[in-house]
Length: 323
Image (cartoon, rainbow, N blue to C red; front, side, top):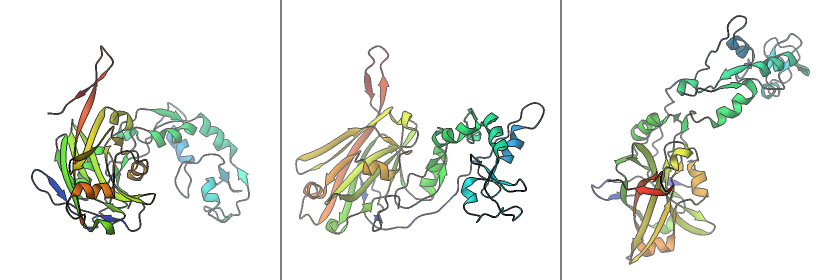
């Protein structure tokens, strides 16, 4: 489980037409499908002489096949390998089995400085070309890089673009898919005193042509057991800022509300949860909202998503309410 809670349980829900009742149980639905879009090395050639591709292949470590960055090592026979692999091969050249010693391949390091290569995500739409040594930094932040699966109930290693992940969440994790920008969910848990860490089944909303993930879970905040609901946006941080959402929970003549911007799924579920960026209800208050004899959690969480529209004349954001 992404949250790292060893005793966490994953809950599922039973759908009712109008109000969704989320019941707690423990399915281990964890199919691993790898991302289908290829992220290949893109070949890039220049007029005459050696192509950038052939030089780029020289810069590929023969052991791990990653690009080599200084210090690049070589054996007495000229075979190269990266510094990470050098520590793993017990001072023997993996190509010719000769002793490695401590020889730097300065010529290859110099050639690397002169190279310009496309981003590795060019096949996914990135148009950028970078000097060899700054390519790696860009790729770790590239807006076209694939996203991690946002499912919180298990350690899922699937990566992909948003349409791929939406299909993966629907088909492999069997999450609830909803159209519309408002929600009205009831989260139910018997014996709430026994559960310290739990994740209810993810719900995905399709709204304004975008996808949003609604999370709900129980965890310890210091010594206090709490429930937390928060929304994540399936896309980049800068696009997430175009949207706002509200969450409300109440009962017994009282209510708590939260309003904020959804976080991008670039931020892990655990990071968002640990930053407490959402609606947090302490268990005592949650049971008070639930009414009755406090033996069962029955929380109704309602909310809506809207798009902030910039008014060009005043520079003020006007909420664009979703019909």
